[in-house]
Length: 297
Length: 341
Image (cartoon, rainbow over all chains, first blue to last red; front, side, top):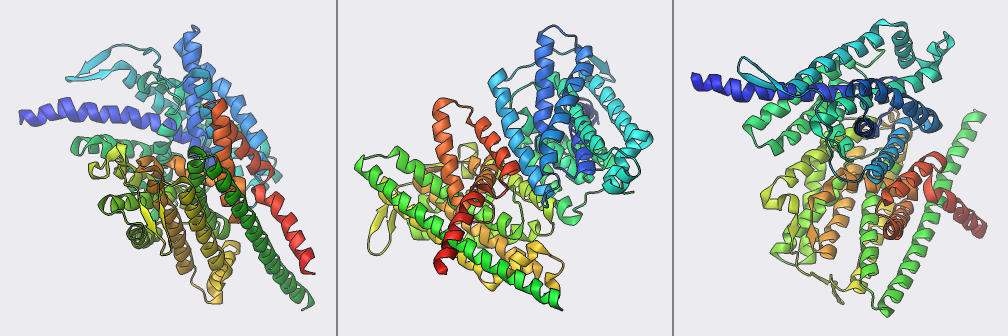
């Protein structure tokens, strides 16, 4: 009996809480991905690199002496024009070609190569780690948890709720959903569709950048961090249903739990194949994902 | 009535034009072969090893890109995990060669194994369409690559090393896999045969069904053809082309590593096809040569050659959606038509 309790206290609970903070992190990255797909029908292969850019901006500006709490605001604000320019300057150029899915996927894939390599040129190939903004740990019921991870979980959930409210409860969100459902109809009703498109892309990019700021102290910063992390985010988006915010949150939390708990049973190196197998299985059985698309009730 | 018949006529013309375009592709491949023989002659005269082996690798990856183009260019299926079959061929070949250094045994094993493996994975991948196809192929390849990466018996992250030198018995002569010139020419012939097989298959009535699938998938079943069977067949065919190309890799390099299955390899093949020209077959071979040259030339100047290649790739996607072949091939086709008259 005591051994079972000890297992829960020292192994299971910390593992699940670590999984929860990882889950929140994945959902933050996946949110932008799913919103961009839901509205623009674009698979943004460069999303992981925007996440990496956010982390590197935090690292560089932090080293320049800017406070972490300011970075949470500043970095997404820097990312917005970047995203806006990418949407207007690159994606819109091929947006109306017949094979939009494939063409935009290829284009953003090319962009991801350029961005990742540029990060290597500027910051070098080594792994760096900004200091933890909230040091220390708390001991609740004998479970020891780093404070920053708890903060990450709380702030992450607040951001997720805020995004869901913006998309589902504001006039702006209504315009985005209308444009996602039928661009031409929305445009004829006075929705500035092209600005909404670019703005939504920029918003998704800003979310990725914000995730980069928040996760840099936990997962460190290195040039390939984008595509290492994006595989998981893609999986979450696919399983949850591309374009579905609720689906992304549920799939993100469940899959990361699968990942951390499976590593208790089998060797941790097999947790990735397990998660990817779930993705393939979902794609085969229910290609549209577990939940519906944005704008489609 | 009249408009219908003129529509038929223009459709017929389109077919004829595609025949002309394919003939132009053949001409371009012949040019490539002639250039390759010239290259081999110069290489032999200078007693070079490095560049001949680099060119051999370019051809091997050209064969791999060919299989990506068969899927993307002729059926509109973008695979983001096609390196799975390239790596699969390389691993099967390596495993057989370590047991017995017989070229034909390795090729036979690769062919048989890929037939089964491609069929099973094809059944999974072909359940979905469009962008989901890209993601499911990506997912399958990730699972397989990670599994290989973690399996001790397959060398795990180190891969399989110490593949012996392979004598390739062609009946009238024997090519040693470590002879730079001979193995380069052998690979050239091998990849050209893959090209011929693909071009032939796509020109049959089966190939026409694929073209019809790409244009209007819902209509094809009404004409009495099974879309599912056609799609699965071409998927397995493309897998075999990729695996046979991959089978040459351990003969050239003497090792295989899990990187051969990774997304980077799949992505490179997609870049190759797009730069060369989607749906042209010849473009895949040219693309591979261009990419290899670019990498080694820019690679001598900076280790960050991916920036240049990425920008070039994006520029091609935006400005030259038909790639290099879209620029060159119509000129050759015009010449051919002029000559026919």
